[in-house]
Length: 247
Image (cartoon, rainbow, N blue to C red; front, side):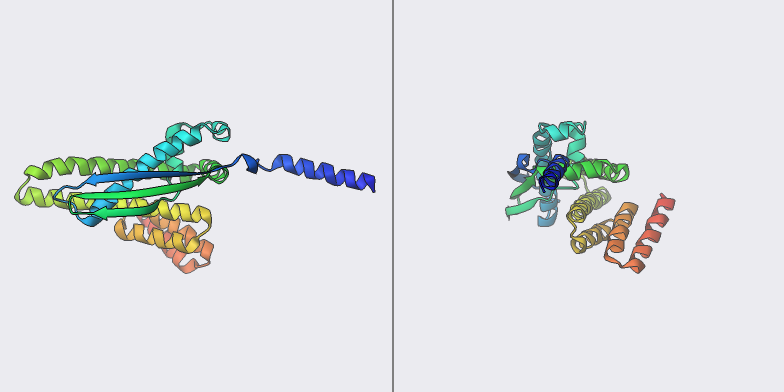
């Protein structure tokens, strides 16, 4: 009897060594406010899109600094820039309050982070080079679009006629591309949390805004497969292949 009890105790102890130290995990809340100074080209929607992207960028920088200091993240040997890229597809931002007055778009948002959970998810995404590369590529695309918006804002001040029309179209497209990337990141994060229906909805909105990006279809294909909708999954797979070949 004592021998059996001892084996149970030793087995429980061995298992405990394999389980991450949950007690060391903590929940941390990041809150930020951001004000976007709109131009004549901005509507409420474009002002909100740009404000959301900018405040998310600030959030991820702070989150990267915080995670960089945690021992378990240090052990992953990631740079702060890599941490920022990966967390863009893991955390979800919640808008607490917002206001648009035709000149500025102000918002207050927050991100709630469970360190134990986010470290596990960072490790999982980092271990999949394809997913990590997609997040990195989309982050660069979003940054490029923000720079393009800043450039076009300056040019449109003096532009007239056809030049202004072309510049305005380019401006609207840049805003749409950023919105599409934001929806993809929401879908990616929902997929990690296991909310397949929301994942598909987010990827569908991303595709509606940018129907020429193959990865959007590729990831929605996987989500449909997880839901058991293989007919739609095959359609998305074929569309992704078509776009890959055309690129």
